[in-house]
Image: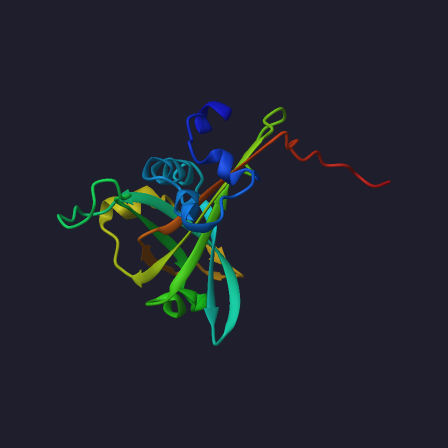
Length: 184
């Protein structure tokens, strides 16, 4: 896992070292290559959490995600990430409809996928505008089989497309994998 994160020039700024103040704060933002690395890590885990405000109250829901290339735009800077994150949510919750046209925050990590001895943890977060969309057959295949049910009701997929902005990548080392203990 450490080799996955090596070479991240912004890592020292994200791992708790002092942050610059004044005009140089622009260096605190992840560089484009680090943003690409964050999206690569995001693509390695299937589920994350979408957060949005609904009637001025925040809520968080689980979502299946995939990272796909965005259609090329001639006006986009070549160093900007050119990926979209597609989300699959249960339509019965009404969350996809609530997110459509809103800024959402999305987060995913490797906390649950670690094995004993793997003490490296990463988390990726970003915000972006969410839009309802209809995925192509190839995109549906990338999502894989949907859940059968959600809270006991048949799973009814709805899809959102988010173009990540303000991406952050955080890395912790020396975090032991959770060991389950049983109470007598």
